[in-house]
Image (cartoon, one colour):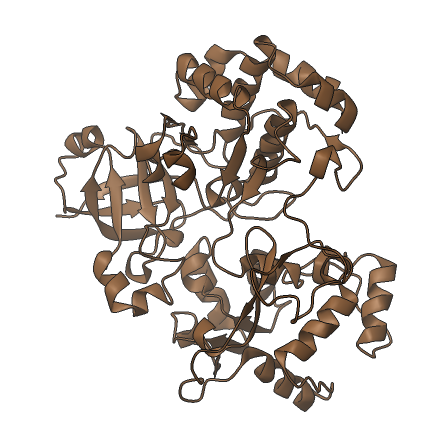
Length: 496
């Protein structure tokens, strides 16, 4: 908003007219799951108008010709049909971005939670490199993480394929380094399971127990009825959380962790900035620091851990993680440090790919064609459904719905529907409807609004009692394995 007040142009593309769109200089409302088509259309306009940055492309990128050949074959009229956006708006969007002195792309889960999520992000990178809008202040492709330490959790290896600092588990050198540091003979070099693969593994009797920390898959994961069936089949379910979530209610053992206000340590935010977090209050009731719980259970299993404090753990992180190597608690006094910070003398890295210096050497263009969503509308399921959040709540509402002030703002689930669709179904504001997909059905009240186009409905994913993820699709991106939570086909029926 500060940038907007200073005259920056704000361009928004979203299937749902969100709050930021109200302030946009240009807003386009494309159909769910058509991001690649829209971006390819924009890049076609940029090439046709000669607005590509050839000096940047020649010096800092590779595989441009294959990308260019694909984009030159794009038909803007066809893109308009696929996306539902006029050729005029596609053109204006492209020109506004390409002609900007500095152009920055920001995206969230609306880009990633698709079977083409990786293609979507690569297409954003293509657009950024095409115009030279990367590697300098005010530019780049910037993912906004869902909460304050999602970045930090990933940095620390909270993924099935990497150790800290994104060091691959398949790399012999990384395996040996961590095995030596942790005093074990060897560590597995096999990539672990994603959450959905765990659920399938339970069904196949390949997974017998789960220890879930700070996660609420009963509400957050697609095809939620299947998730409940899987969790109920486990021989042992342990849940570590700060509230008794719907997932925790299924657990054999509940371990009470602490909230942000009760913990010491560091958070890493969406701009890779590592910041100190300091305990404001003592843990409430029987709650304990998460690292202490893990350490105690590890010791009882027979693997000795003897950390004295979060700082003690952070020192080990710095020793084993090149991008954190120069960060210490002393250096974190103040505004924090942005990784990579490879040495104590290094000031940190405010923005990546400085001056076109890409981590891999040169920026790689990808020739990416549009692919439709895994599930499309038909006569039986004629409405596109997309999901998202409302301003008062995070994710499954574990914290925000336990805040009276925030829950007062939005206290129950709902479905947004276009006025024309509401009339055709004889629905009025506040009516209850049954929404069904190929996986399940739920009931909720409707909100009639022009925030969504005809043929599209929207539901927030915060509400257990109107759990939209009973409807969503488990189809995943083939590379990132993220499920297609942002688009599926549904049918609607008025509740008598």
